[in-house]
Length: 269
Image 1 (spheres, one colour):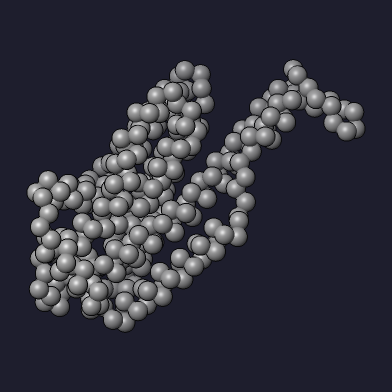
Image 2 (tube, rainbow, N blue to C red):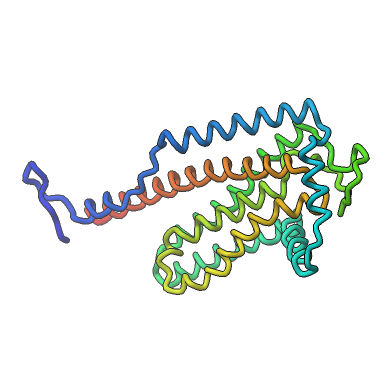
């Protein structure tokens, strides 16, 4: 085994220095922490004001009326409807299950080929945990704010579906930011980043971005949410995504170090 010499003149494995170089720096930094805290404060204050005044604000009505009065090409409307319907609860659960099963299968294939399946299995747990945490917190805000859906106060707007759920924040918007945002994050991390066919993922990355940008507009256009609901959904999804990415990097880094220490201990025997 190759070795290096420390200042005391004793020999230590070179693999240890290489492992240290691979350590991921996941320390809490002031700027992201400040952004997270400010985001939570803004979301909570907004939730309080909407709870006190559940009726639509003037900007809510104006935005919905403007969106619904626009003459959009039929293919644009169809695309917007698709993005919205694809993120309904049932399709979302099916898609999430498909990702979970798919990543586990890839991990098992990697293990069969003599490679570590850890990253693939961590990705599977990460995406499910991110969506679960974000959706759970969004549901809590939704329950506490208790804002009724558009149309409750007899507003003169078109409503695609009269849903019984509460309105603030927008669940579709929050889900898309957390779900597709985490998938984008994973697509730029090892082992995906080092995959020789990673260019295949470019259309999916574009889809994720388009979906995140489109879902908010679709909720307003369909009369399912007010603008303030959508903005809160974007904020909610972003701050919980930021938190989950940090936790994912911290936990996976800790696991990697533990596995490396175990290998070194076994090699020293």
